[in-house]
Length: 337
Image 1: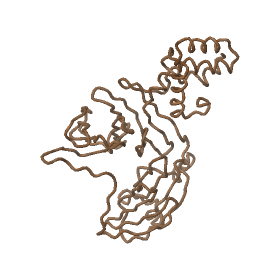
Image 2: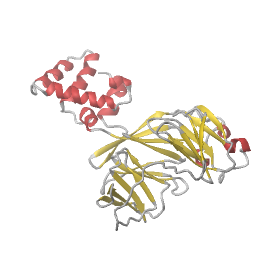
Image 3: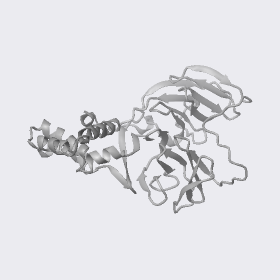
């Protein structure tokens, strides 16, 4: 196999390139979109700076809603820009614009489960719009509005927290208080684990990466380089640095990380991918390498296939099943096939 072929297809995976070890797990940050549509490298004034905006990101790879935070508005923004709500695709391209007609300032944006955008103004009144910005209906200030997950604590339970986040499967709750991240069972009666972050600086946000790990984020105003701290357990952690502001959106199998310039996806590497690309001596690893050698007309392909068959009557079936699971989590179509 020539070096160019190796570098293109196998090396990034067989060496775990881009995979961050964290305890018994690996994490990888995949670049979904490398050039966001709202970013103009030649004219910063025409680009979106996420630190100036109130935001909401719809789950399942959905759109991004932005409106300027009036507490941070500068003279370069006209009033029409201040009051507009813009809806962008996950790649950062404009899908729609909502011309705000409310008589109060916007204080929050939330995507409902039905892909409806709820715009909350400071007196509690809301407007509901669809994904392209079309108006659906209004919610008066006195109406009951429930957004997210509500947890009732058992009588006598006391939990101190300045930040709180519920895991995707709603089985665990993470809290931050005085530098400690603590993860509880959903009823708060069972402390799963805790980690000292070595800082009393309040994070910008606490979210979950699926249901696998807690992620704490400090923006560039709170920490010089900006830090994303991934905590899967009490004794392990890994970090990513961001100079500019990012917004986070938890997903079932990971975490979307969106910046001015890029859209990334943080994901715990599934066991099937590890056994395919790094284990080396597993049936699925041999089967995958055999495919690459076959395309290069190498006799090693036949040797690898025979070694899998000789491992037992079920070895080939198990190897194929593992490869199918690994393919479900792969982004590169060259590797999926």
